[in-house]
Amino acid sequence: MEKTLWNRRGFLKAAALVGVGGTFAGLTACAPSSTSQPEEDSADKTDQQDTIEITRTESFDIVVCGAGASGITAAVHAAESGARVALLEKAGEVGGSSLSVVSALVRNPDDDLTEEVNEWVADSHWRVNAEAIYTLLRNSGTAFSWLQDNHGWELTQNGGMWALPGTIQTRKDVRTELYQNMITSSGVSLFTNMTAKQLILDESGAIAGVIALDSDGNGVQFDCKALTIATGGYAANREMVKEAFGFDGICDGLPQNIGEGLEMAWNIGAKKPINFGGQMLHQTLTPCTDSLLEQFDEFPARYPFFTAYLPHFMNVTEKGRRFRNEDLVNIPDAAANSSAFQGAFHYVVVSKTQLDKLAEGGMAALGVTANPPIPPRFLPANFSIETPWSDPLPVFEAAANGENGFMGNTFQELAEAAGMDPATFETECKNYEQYCASGNDSQLGKRPESLIPLEEGPYFLIKAEQNNLTSWGGLATDAQYRVYDNDDNPIPGLWAVGIEAGSNLYNDTYVGNGVGICLAVTSGFLTGGAMAEFVA
Image 1 (cartoon, one colour):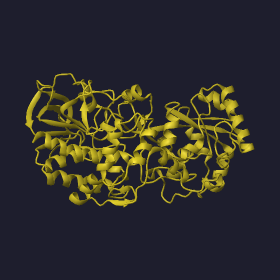
Image 2: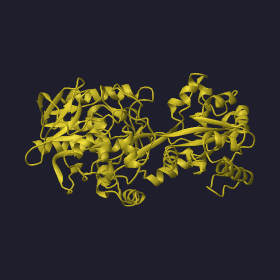
Image 3: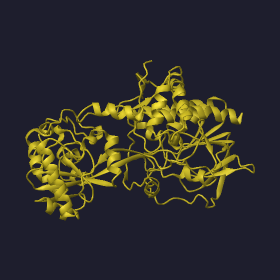
Image 4: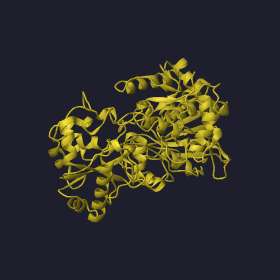
């Protein structure tokens, strides 16, 4: 198999080469915004130290907490190795965010990984575990081949990327059925609507079980000799994300992932990674869209949303300062992280002159040559960059509701409407006009073809927010996914897989390059075998 290097630097370079509006399809794991689990207030978290009344006790060799890709893989492989396994899932369905993943980065066991791992470590500023990266990549081909050969997964190989089964329309149903078949055929005992809350240790400090709550709030004790935490992180816990990462934006990932699995491990002395706090910020959303969809047809209702994905518009902070080369919006991960670095949201500056161009010739009139990297679920039917924007001005006037958008006839008036310092914003806009006139962005280096002047008003500010799909990491582990205590010793019988074990691989953020699902399947596969051996 031809090896392709997909480190972070290579990923961003390749994405940039796609050009204006190009997408780097097949690499991101775009999680659904909901599952059958009711959304809950992320601040309403059960105190892990509270006493839970036990109504019944179950006994197994192994318990896996979380039935996403990593948890299912761990449970099934352990059961196939002869262990009696319980799989606990908080939601009412299995699969988690893996139901919407596109492709996985996979390597063959005999691939030479030296160059790739060395670049990966350097790109992460050497604050990662090189052994864990080698372990992941070296075993990924075996793990995915197991899915393909033993469990009927139709995986399409394209160099170093393996596409998972199903299209955008069918993948959830296809993969849910595959997972259910894996669980049933292996003899794993699945408990849905069952939330793990407290770990149990024996007198030696080894794992002895876990206490969970069922959908009726009844406590169920699961006794076991080995346990894996595969609970999907804490991205929906806004306060935890803000404290760990400094990001106070929105989560369009799974609402049930509020960090309960991590907290119950921390409460027994599991160690937080030194680089705890990483997230996967990906894609841009505009909060004005929901109300616009109630007033206009789908295509015009998304006009303001589309401007957040076009580099031809000036981007400013809440204070009215231009903060980035807007060409970065061509790369979803770069767009999200560059925005989040300056705050929870930013504004897109739009003028009537620019809207007139869009009304005349659509996005192509601005110089767009390929579809912007807009998530497919947000694209109207028969979308085309050549389609003129019919009568866009009333749409932007409706978006300027004083909360998610603002309007002004002058730069100063617009700044006052948004609570900005008028002099600061006006200076930024006038400087930007000079860059457009000269074709040279000496401030932030945007390409000349993306410099479209504002010219005549009225002018609009469209609020744009960054989407957090998932947290990344949370438990310090060794390269075999065994969870460390605060003295860097493995806690006997405790493993962590998938996202919970991701801190070994990246020092700050995960950019959605296929490593997430690779880690989920590979860590689950390896841990399932290790747990079965441990309890034998």
